[in-house]
Structures are given as C-alpha cells and as structure tokens.
Image: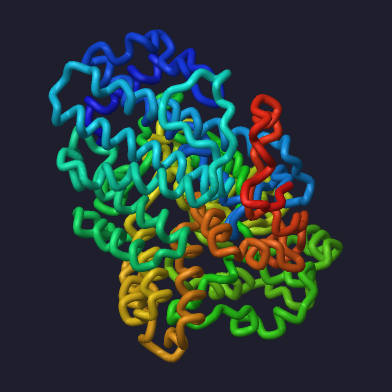
Length: 585
C-alpha cells in the first residue's frame, strides 16, 4: 500500500492546482498560491516541486498513454476515432495541440522550480535533490516532445505566455538540452539511486530513472555504446525484473516492485486514480465497463507457440488460412447451438458444414493453450474465463460466441458493449472481482511509464547493433524466462540467425511484453516500422476470425514527424510546420 504521506501530498496538490491555466507555458500554475509566493518557504517549495509531478496525470504525458496503443500494433478503438489512422488528420487536430501543450505545462512548472529553488530557505541537500528531480522531469517532458515533433522551442526559464515566440530548435539541439539536464541529475550526490517499496518518497525521481532516460535519448540518436552504458547503470542502481508471475506485475500489490522505474502514482479517489479498467474492461467487470479499446486480432496471431515456433492456424485447424474470413467464424462458435443460432451464423457467412455440436469450443481453445504465456495473461481469448462482478457479487464469466443473455447459473457469458461481434478483450489492467478497485473510473494501481524490462530490451537493441549478439540474447532471455517463454537458442525454432533476425526478435519481444501499456506506438515510430506493422493490406479492426469492421489508411511518411500545432502557429508566427525541412501533415 502507498504511504499515507504520499496520499496526503497528492491530495493537497490536487486541491492546490484546481484553477490551473492551460497556456502553452503556464506562468501561474499554482492556483490558490500566487506564483510570487511559491518559493518563499520550504513548505511551498514542497508543493511547487510536487506540482511538476502532477503533470504526469495529464493524458498524453503519462496517465492516458495507454490510449496511444490504438496507434500501435496491439489495440484498436472500437469507434475508429483516430483520424491519423484513417488519413483524415490535419494540423488542427487536437491530438497534436494537446500533446504539445500538456508537455509544455510540465516544462513551465519545472522551469519555475529550477530558477527559484536556489532562493528558498531550506536544507541544502534537499534543495539539491529537488533541483535534480525538476531537471529529470523537464528532460522527460522535452524527450516526449522531441520524439514526436523532432525539434521544438526550448525554454529553460519561466516566461509569460505572450513571450513564447521562439522558433523550433533542431532535433539535435533539443537532445543536447535533455542530455545536459539528465547528466546534471546523475552527477548530483543527493539524488538517490532508487526508492524501495514502502518508502514515503516512492514515486519520486531517482538516479536510475535519469540513467534510463539518458540511455533512451542516446538510443534515439543511435549512439548505441553510450546508451548501453546508461542502461547497464540502471541495474547498478538497484532496479531489476519483478520475479513473480507476469500477470501479477500489474496488480496493486506489486506496483512498487523493483521493476517499476517510473510510474504515475494513483490512489483510489476520484481524480487521483486511472480509468484503464473502465476503458479496457467489459460489462462483466466491476463497475460495468465499456471495452472502448479492443485487442487487435492480427496482433494476437503474432504470439509464438510456447516452444518459440511461429503460430500458424493451419497447424491447429487444417485449411483455416485458405478459407474466407467470414467462413472461419464457424470455428469460434459455442457448443450446442440452437437451430435459430445455426441459421443466423450461416446467414452471416459461417461455413456450418465444419461445425461440431460437441467439441467446437475445445477445438478453438487448443489454438491458445500452448502459446507464449503473456498472451493469455494479458488477453481474454475464446472460451477462457474471467473473474468479474455484477455490483458487489463476484462471478466467473466465459467469453463465448454467440453471446446469450439471461443465463441463470455459472459460468455466465462474458458481457460486453459489443455483444453483436466477437473481439479479443484485455485482461491486463482490468479489475478482477469486486474489491480490486473502488470505482471503474479511478483504479488505485500505478500506471507504469518505464519498467526494467523496457530497459533490458533497449539494452538488447544496443548490444545487437554493436555486434554483441551473445549479450543481446542474454538480455532478451531474462525477459522471456520471466514470462515463461522458450529461451532464444534453446531449440531450432528459437535459434538466432544473425543480426537482422535478432533485431526483429527484439522488436517482437517488446510488442508482446508491453501490449496495452502505451509503449509500442513510440517504438514503431522510432524504428520507422509504423507503416509496415500497422498499415499493411487488410489492416484494421477485425473480429477474431478476420472479418474487417473498418480499415486503416497510411497518410504517408510525413506522419513520422508531427507538425507544430496549427493553434500554436496562430499565436507564434516563428513556429513552422516542421524543422530540418521535414514534410508534415
């Protein structure tokens, strides 16, 4: 459980920030405390620094990053409301402006602290630690901006909104600013390497986070040796893999494990938790949730068999791949269909000649039973069970097709907001039973932003690019061993066949390990693989057997660099669509 000191601190800041401005660079970010008074005492300085952390609760900064998986490979939004996926986006789209302004809000607060902390009468060691924390957070905000806009205006001191007239710096110049802040924090002796579970300071910036972020900055610039050295230092700070079951890593009991390098701190109070269970969960989840986000069917098929071999539907159901998608629906039908249900399925295109009145469910379940364990730990697959709730009553539900309402005994059919279609659903981050979270809209489980598994796989990338294959494989195998997957080079299927093969294995490992966490989209953008991984022919939201509900359309390579938002360009004529001559939407 979180220390009461943290809870009171977060609550007080939430009240303090009730009247924040939403300007590009907030000049009065402290609501009821005038900016001029914020740095007149140690107590106010505590609140001022904590206010920087509160920026992590903004959607694109931290709290809602899971939604970005709709742009990555693992997730679809059931309502198709992401114009960038449909080639209908313009520079006035709110995604560009919100992402921009939310991060600059944090930069403003960090700048205010960095400039004014030296004036505060407080212990010097605490002041030095606060300065380091503010610099790491500022670096994080600039890092998140630079990876998308590839060059943004740099402000390192507080400015009035009317004075925000700088043009974009080059991408390289922003990287240097980020590196300078992180290096200063790494060199600060008063910044702890790590906070252990139960510490009243848990959730604050650490030296391990500074190394992790600087390593990521180097990785983006393909400075692999520098990045590797920083990633190696993260473990030396005391971080490591959670040693329990993968599924349990995302439960409240383990949110302070040594794997969590950086996370958004949440508690079960309105406005202070997260809404992931609400958006990933179903009507059978506590609070009756919406399954706004669905697991991509093509992504599910990428998960390997348990021995590391490639999954192939024909190995489980001969001829499956050659059938039309609608016809394949027959394999996903429940046992004991009524005559009316059979007729409805036939009308919908299912090849009912292949229906088994008994054993239909067992046949399809076999396709998921011997796979990478992270599949069923993260995703509710056909005819698997889920421990949910109806009000305060707990029940076990089964994902069946077609859905039948009104059953009066267990196991109940799992109920969704999409009962007329059969989709894969998230298990990860979704509350089980009726007591894990107090409300569907505010789960108390911390939202991970950087895990040690992320750093290990980043380190594997570096080693591979430095032609240190054995070291890269060792990093990947640590993650696979924890997951219960077959280790690389343990059999013919997992034997690595050179640098290119290992590069793709590492990328897939990241896709499986971080599904639903808001990580993958940024990976695909960094690798330059977004088009191939997300916009291939036939890509889109599909039912489990491949029937397409809506498709995706590539907007061109311009989307690899986001434009300075239209709204900001109206206020600041020195902003351009892009820097370095890049073409943008």
